[in-house]
Image 1: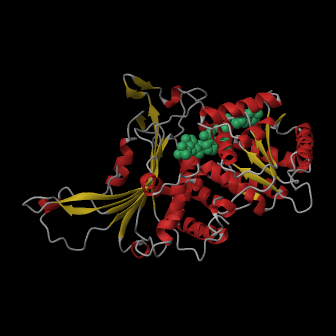
Image 2: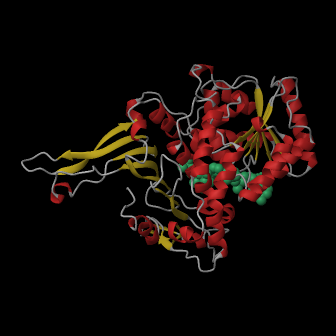
Image 3: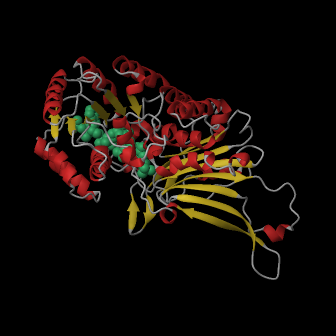
Length: 503
Ligand code: NDP
Ligand code: BG6
């Protein structure tokens, strides 16, 4: 288990073949291959390890190996003996995801890996394809008899990228296909935000200390905020993004996962099921937005051309593979409410967007004002409410913001900040999210992966909003210029409650 006290050095993959579907794609080249290179360099992969790519693009084994070497190098990888060993034996299977011939070829390659590389019949299939391919790939694996380990006591697991389905209905349908082929314990639904050390640190902060939990409730907390802002646009992924939008791409998964860890009840242990049970309880307590609440508490936006003269950026509708009249949201801001004893009447404000001025993910608890302030308004005019900020990225750390006296002869209180930075606080370096998650999938540790009931509940929160935006002709689609902080309406959503987005 991920949070067991086993030593760090003991976390090593067992012998296995890692098969990546969608091996020619962006995620594979930018994230997965560099993560595998780092795992190899850091001694986390055994000698009995094989890497196999599957995709429709025509490539030889050597072409694929060269691509992998190039992407590892671009990501700052080094040529370690174990990485060279892996790339020297890499295999590539070219074929359609619904073509039985692909799985016959794959079976041969895996059989060969068992005898020449010693992979012991163990397989991890990583589906790094667009979501439309998840079901055909799993059906193909099952029909080809590849959904079980090839030797006694061996395993076959499937790692599935997000988004898991398009809505609650399609997620159920996908689950039907996948669960017909794999046990729930062998299904690893990935959300790479859970692999980030700073997201896991939410658990350490809350449950390894005694000073925070007593104030982690409606008595002390006024509101919470989660911001996931990106400077990137859709980066050539217009086709995919048109089917997703910010709600399906970020809110349904990354935001709701972080939010559930941030606000869940203390688990009885760090056993995977204990943590997942608490997360799903929190997700179930989030009020499903309906009718007037959606119109009032959900704002979407779409970026238009913007930026500075030297760095002018295209509008979303001008991006490749995007409908010039697209209504897809590249920004979403929501107020969510949680119906349980701990968080009743504490609004949770969430915002995410592409082409914002700064890349930043942070989670903030804003505390209530003191019940009585023995100060004049002019003495506290520069004081914001106390807050605790968890900086997930790019800076990684924690800040406590509180009022302090300004040095001088008058009594003025201004907001001060006590900052902890991971970079300076610990000499150890955090592993990349995908490095951690790939290793966990080979080890068979599900703690940082999403359970089926979490997926369903998250869609139930998101679906009414996306449905309203997609079907109601009168639903507004406010625009914002690239490199601005989103549409004016998002500011109004929170200011109406007498609060503001914390920059
Ligand atoms: P890509 O669009 O790059 O697709 C991956 C590969 O899948 C392509 O190289 C292509 O290979 C194949 N493919 C593409 N479209 C189709 C299609 N319509 N039918 C069949 N095969 C197709 O996707 P990404 O790599 O960006 O993303 C893969 C998955 O990872 C997605 O589910 C995404 O949500 C998720 N993800 C991506 C992130 C990223 O940064 N890219 C980050 C987090 C998650 P070929 O044609 O050779 O078969
Ligand atoms: C992915 C989304 O899940 O997360 C992308 O599909 C987004 O659109 C990315 O850019 C953000 O990840 P990170 O780790 O850079 O915050």
